[in-house]
Every structure is written in structure tokens, then in C-alpha cells.
Length: 143
Image 1 (cartoon, rainbow, N blue to C red):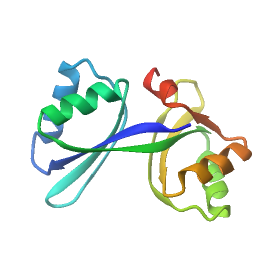
Image 2 (image 1 turned 90 degrees about the horizontal axis):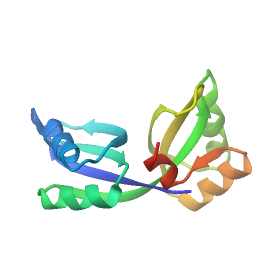
Image 3 (image 1 turned 60 degrees about the vertical axis):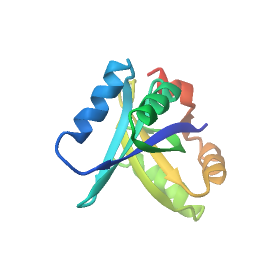
Image 4 (image 1 turned 30 degrees about the horizontal axis):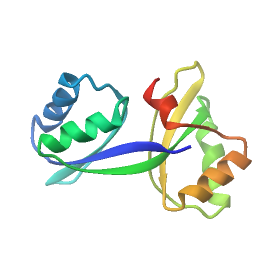
């Protein structure tokens, strides 16, 4: 129930994101989800791709500093209150969210939230107990 996420640390300058996505494109790696956060000097690109091993290898060989993490991919209804339901489950269990980002799911009326928490196993347990659908890495990579 965990998904591999790659974080790429990059200088905050024009063209850097284009360079990374170009490297991935030339290697035949497709992006499934991404989040970009920046400060004045550097940014953190968080990506989920269809071929994580290949992406890690090509980005390291291209000189980028990266880190791999595991995250949760939770399916929510794409309607008002859909996100609230899973946030309430986590809050009621006292689980704090480090960050999250989302994208529309493969099926109509669904979205997928990528969630990073400190207590990963416990978060998975309470979400499953609340009948939240969690996707496996292979399900995200092949979307």
C-alpha cells in the first residue's frame, strides 16, 4: 500500500525543471504525479513516475541530488467533502500530514491524493479501517 516517490533537489533557476523533465522524457519515463515547492534558492520536485528504478538511476547519473520516500496514494471521491473524509480519519487518529498533493484519477469522479505522514503504517491501518481505497505502487505506475 506504499508508493515510491522521488524527491529531486534543484537550484531555483530558469530552465531547471525543463532540464529534469527532458532527461526523464528522453529515458522514456512518464510522470504520474508531481509537486514542486520552492524557496528563494532551491526547490524540491516530488515526482511519481511509471519506472521509479530507471528514473532514480538516470537522475543520479545526471548529477542530481535525490531522495526516495514512500507515500500513500488514497482514492477520494471528486466531490465537495471528498478530501475532508480522509483528513478527518487521519486527524481523529492523531496522525499529522507532512505534505500532500493530488491529481485526478483514472476513473470519472475520482481523485488520488498522495500523502506523506510520519506514521506510515498506522496511517495505512486507520485509512483501510475507514474503507478508504489505497493504491499500490504498481497501480499508480501503470495508470
